[in-house]
Image (cartoon, rainbow, N blue to C red; front, side, top):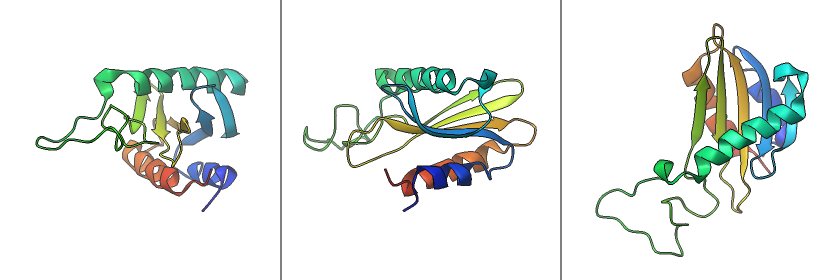
Length: 143
């Protein structure tokens, strides 16, 4: 299983990638970062992105809904339809006039609160392909 640095370098091969990071969303600390950062401040980029991830992950409006006719016991889920170690939100996409910002939560066996962040140039990037690549990377990442 690839580590953080290898996954980040792989993420930078996505067409239009300008920067990538693995960030711990409860503290706002970057576990690894490559490429450009907005305003040249990697700590601010990590903290601001983590704030957005935390807001999305903690909102009950975004909690996974159970399919009709199913129920999970308290030992099987954490109250939001997600199994332990899974964020209720898979990813967050922010679109600006020039860029895509993708946040992909990493499911782990422990409550890690980690996500991938990928910054794409909108003219060169393909949002659908970038989402698929981040999904694959988040499944392969060894923490």
